[in-house]
Amino acid sequence: MEGEQLLPADGHVHAEFSWDAPRGSLERTCARALELGLPGLAFTEHADFVQAFADQRRLDVDGYAGAIERCRAAFPALRIVLGVEIGEPHWFPADAAKVLADAPFERVLGSVHCFGGPAGAVDWSQSMPKAERPADLMRDHLREMLSLVESTARFDVLAHLDYPKRYWPQDAGPFDEAPFEDEYRNLLRAAARRGAVLEVNSTRGMDPARGLCPGPSPLRWWREEGGVAVAFGSDAHSPDALAAGFDSARQAVEAAGFRPARDPLDYWRR
Ligand SMILES: [Zn+2]
Ligand SMILES: [Zn+2]
Image (cartoon, rainbow, N blue to C red):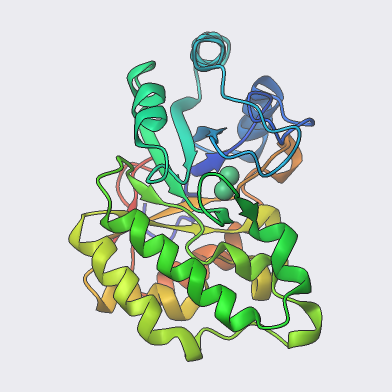
């Protein structure tokens, strides 16, 4: 409605079926969504196949899909999307296809969290904070994202485009996209060509200078390079972080020329 501030649905939310969300809860996150007045949300539990952390475990697809059904019955006023966040699906085509065949997923996020390849993967959160040449590593990440985008891996939404930005070394000064503009544009052009949706990830409300992935400049480049749609995601791993940081995300998306869809669960479009 004219003048009314429509809250976008949170399209990237983790709960207890994600190996790294010990404080997550599908049920309490649904209750929190109603409290916030969100029209709906997409749960996107992790399906990771690398072993970058000792406690990393595979997604229990059946258990997860069953729990979503129970939430839909318990919270009829809320629209609950069954989604999944697949890490490095282009490194594990058979495993990723198996997960997607095992449940009727409605939203698939494609992510890159690691470098080093399937056998020796290291998460950027471990290596970037102490990097001596962080710019080289950011280029490696953008190149890996391009491999994902140019692969045949199935995904709808390209998640946290510049994920290592969250972990940019404190002593390297604030992260600036300008030196990487060519790499970003090249990647965004390829993503637009495959019809992907670009996510703006607000990293659970982290300071936007570090946590808005991507920030205002790449969002503008996305539109200039032919991108048509944007998704919002908080990447909450606990109920209290649901939709955190959406004000700055929303401002950046609006400034880049994207507008809310009629259906609040739909993507924002140019
Ligand atoms: Zn992620
Ligand atoms: Zn996530």
